[in-house]
Image 1: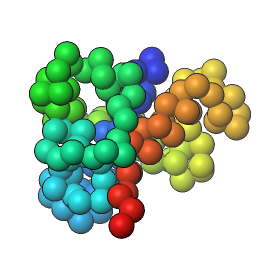
Image 2: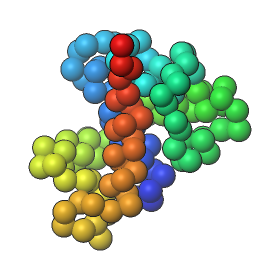
Image 3: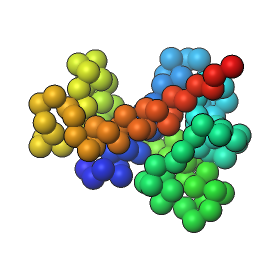
Image 4: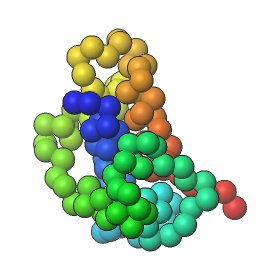
Length: 123
């Protein structure tokens, strides 16, 4: 799995957390996350897209559509279970060559994804 695919899996996993927790049936309508901004439904001045997200389209409209499509893709049970297990261990899910402490460039990508998808506006 490459870094771009890893980042997008992390973003999708995070954006769908409120749905799995039954806090909403649509992650775009969940007001305390950046999913709506990523999908072009609202402006968020605190949100900065990662280069991987910018590469999802040549315009905001294209990127918004790609983000919405990403949310409809099914994360297979194996990857879902692996991500959840690694998170419970406070480790980063990824390639076998990750360092034991989970800190790598890909870990930083997932940290970025968490920051992007869990943005909470102050005030």
